[in-house]
Every structure is written in structure tokens, then in C-alpha cells.
Length: 377
Image (tube, rainbow, N blue to C red; front, side):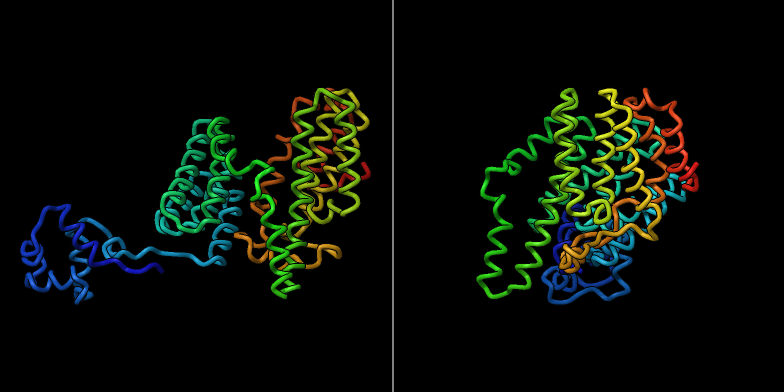
């Protein structure tokens, strides 16, 4: 809980109503000296007087005393997980109401506001209209603005800048995203070396275990970023079939080397899906279906898991501490039921028009949308 600020709030609210100390004292049934002592922080009002004063100033008791409710990291994770499940089981409008009530209640809990923005960015497409989708994205951007205007946590503000840029992209505001990201995203900047320097600093300080753990987490993220960036490069070069085949060959090799389909099936699925699109666009139907088969394998891994969680493996064996420090911990940003709900729309991509009548493609769609059971059909 943040420090209470009752004296300053009484002064501010009294001035806003253009009241003297004596006028406030008359309303509260106390002496002018009592009000003076409240405003100087010498004494505090009797507990029973707080609701009366809050009602007089037309604020809540929390607002009057300056109480800013906060949630712990674990509480934020639990709320996020509950809301993810709600999106799959409750009417969309009901979930939005729950989110907005939560944001209003904890409007000064900036880590929560950031994760609510992430929640919107991962589920806005469930809205019934494009206008409502845009409204949700703009609402999330507003939460980012509040963080940037009021939060003193540099790391949280940095995350808010990136999230807001992503929201701008979803809104089609490329110029705003460039303006936000360009100053810090330049790979030639020294800031890109901060992870390397930190590992060396841990080692120099004699904390070898922390150096190993941080270095492994950095390598893990570099791997995921490499694969994610490669999917973007495929999009940028989709007209160049030869270039795309080389990208797919190299990245698929790296994914196999690091067992990425098991380590992070979501990242692997996204790359395989983009590969399938490229192959289909270049009329390489066999390779497109092969890539979709690998995509299906990754999605099947996600859907069969009791819970989608971030994890390491025998090689990445020191990620636990780092994962635990993430805002959502090991939890996925979307519930697995959301994945199944959106599979059919994903597979309706226009690039697959040339193969959508093929039996193999139709069986794949049925398996992914109806829960499997036709593997040998």
C-alpha cells in the first residue's frame, strides 16, 4: 500500500470547494483548530468522521485518505488466469465489465494495468465489431499512458512503451509505433549490450550461479527472438521463393537442434504456419501441407497439455528463477480454449485457397477444430 495522504487531500478538496477551515469544521461538527491539526498532520479525524467527510467532498473514503490499492505479483497472475478462462466461458461484455471494475479499483496498481493491457491485446479480436475492437485497443493504450505519466519503475515504463507501440500497430498507427520504438530499438545502441555486461558483472562479483542463470535466460530469449524475427522476414520476402526456402531451411535446422517444438510449441507453431503460407503462395502444395502438419503437431502439444506453461528442458535447465520473476510467471498469455476457438479462422487464410479442397487439408482442419481423433482417417 502506498503512503496515505489525508492531510494534503483535505486541503486540496477544501480549496476545490472554496471552503474555509471554519466552514468545514462547522459541517463536521468540530472546531476550526481540529481541522487545522488534520491538515498539518498533527492529528487525524475520528474513524467515524471519514465517511461523512468523504460524502461531503463527493469522493470515496479511499480517495479521501489517499489509499491506493495494490495487488501482489501472485494476485495479478491469478486474476489474469481467471480472466483468460472467462473469455472462453462468459459473454464478452461480462468479461469486459469485470476487467474495467478491476482496473478502476486498482487504478494505481501499475503492474496490473500493464497486464490488463496485455490481456486486451491478446483478446480484442473477440469483440463483435471492428469499432469495439479499436475501442478496446485505445482503452489499453490509455492504461499505458497512465503508467508512463505516473509510474517511477523504469522497467515497467519500458514495457508500457513497447505494449503501447504494439497497440498502435494493431490500430494501424505505424507512425506512432515508430516514434515510440525507434529511439531505443536501434541494434547498434550500447543498450543492446546490457545483458552481456550484466552477466560479466555477476561473474566478476563472484555470483557465478546468477551469471549462469541470467546468461541462459538471455540465450533462451535470443532463440525465441531469432525464430520470431525469421517469421517476420518470411513475410517481408514472401515474393522471393528461393530466399524464403533458405530462411525456412536454416531456421528449421535451428529449431530441430534446440528441440523448439517441445520447448516452446507456440513459437514453433507460428513459424511453421508462416512457412505454410509462403509455400502455398508459391504453389508448393506438398511443402505447404508438410508445414501445416508441423504446425498441427505444435498446436496439438499445446491443446493436450493440462495447462500451457513456459518451461525449460535438459539444455535450458536454469530458467526457473527467471520464469518465476516474469509478470505472469510460467502462465501463457492466452487460455488454450482460446487457441482452439481461433484455429478455424486462422486456417481460412486466403493463401490456402488452392489446397482447401484437398482431403489432407480438410482432415487437418477437422482434427484441430474438433479435438482430434482422426489422425489415421
